[in-house]
Length: 145
Image 1 (cartoon, rainbow, N blue to C red):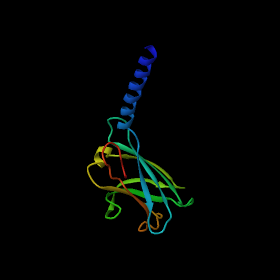
Image 2: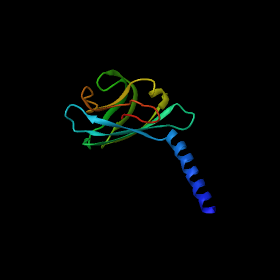
Image 3: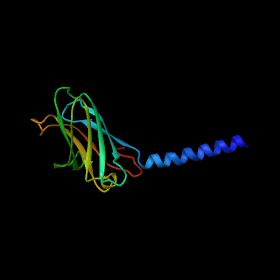
Image 4: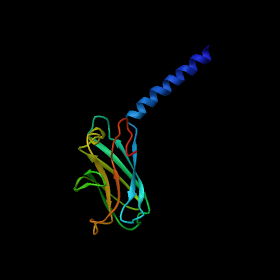
């Protein structure tokens, strides 16, 4: 009986912690190559500190150049129909990696519309997009599926 009780309590605790973790769990979505760039990867978005209006965006790409900073932004719209005016700047991708804190937006805000991240070829060739990913939040933390 003692063993059964402790197993039940452990299971209940695990379920409780899983529920807590899923509420603030990082959400990941795909970034796919555009214009024959061969650059593909993922962006992980998570809510910043509790009670703040900021998100953290971590991007990891394969096939990215190692010697060029690539500007990135969050835009309104989708990759198929992107508003050309950037809404939120992100830290430039360097050697396939970037981490940004974006103030003035929450994950809940992103659930209210269509948004996308796009990556430019370079600061000199900003008109050429090399990758894009839709930030479509599908409820309960499922992004980009």
